[in-house]
Length: 276
Image: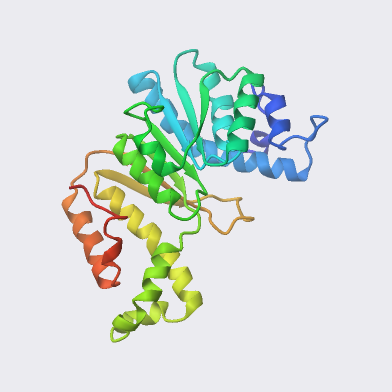
């Protein structure tokens, strides 16, 4: 991408960019806003081809953004892609904080973004909610904390999503189980990898994402893991993109089970479940 790509695009809503603090109140750009815009476009360049594919193959599309916060991602996707579609394509933002849901609803109304709605639900609650359609085309979760990323993956699997895009956040669950079972497994030299508390935390984070990838593969997805360059302010810049391809499931399911057993964390089998 050339540096010119980081200027505001002609069809973008200036009011939205001001609301998201990507532009200053007087509509100008400073160094900080240029950096934010660069991040937005960098993430969008990964998601845009997926949206284009869905548009070409099935027409109207649905996207659910989990742990939406201020719905930064949803608004940008709508502004850059959805608002030109002129059909019933829809973005749903799922967020537990009621005040953020209200603010997002108000902003969408003000901008005339009719194909956006926001639900005050946890990710887990959204799986059973009748406020969402039975099938969703693309599921995103940007820095959804702790097990919310895993819930977003579970949601995507239940909703038969073709694409899953997650930037995982901290997840302490695996590290906690590793720590708890450390005494039982100290006979194995491999436990040196997570013997020290700092390593337990770091290894727990790494293995969480490995298990997520194996879980997705065990459900027939092709998985790509890459880095979000330019997100240096964030420690968590791993981007996982899964595409449903109905791939063979047996080998990744076996690997998933083997990793859980080798690390002594089989109690997490339900969290990182393979296809039944």
